[in-house]
Length: 314
Image (cartoon, one colour):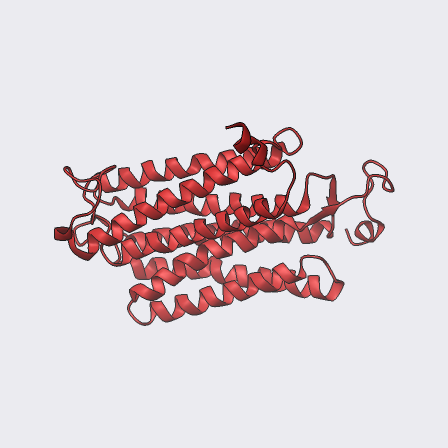
């Protein structure tokens, strides 16, 4: 045990950075496999929880492809849990110098068993759409936490100051609210649509076509706001310009996939891509918000000082 403890990082090195990126990628990947479970009607492929059947921990040949898909998703959840443990131990010895990383790793790690329990409840409740929707909300929240974790791994724990004008920050945060609203309405839309995860699973009962139109409104508003962020960032050379361009690209893909799936009868493959892109959207939006500030050299900047160019643009 002593030798293992000595091996754990005491500073941010390549191991920590690699684990952070794997953690974020695994969170998004699990959303994709969870979508596969739902879109192939394999939500009850393992009809019990935490075991797959009343008599078996794993799926059996008699359960067919649905049992294989559902149990495979559960195994990936276990793998994600192992990545969470690795991330926690990767920053454990830095908990005094980097309490931010310690608490981020702990909070995101606790979300893994919480997700397992929520997933189990959804199975026991025959894929209740509200429980399944809440399951996705927690997944998106964990993607956000892992994005912050990656950012903090690279930026360190330093004093930061605004790197963009105040009005730009207001638009950026407003955009994040609209992004969250778009995702939430999308969850309700999926919960009322044909992909319930099982042929006998209940639906929310709302008109899916009407919800699709409602879902499109904040989506288009997000694109407009992001265009403002991108044009401003590029014209003024703000450090958010790369993230604003990436955000617009992800939104364009989301809108394109959404329009195609809405006009082609919601094919399962496109719905799955739409779900994964939602989490990518949450990650990129978070990254843009994190770049609204920049590290300050406390040796040359007095406490409370704000860069002069920002004061002029407020």
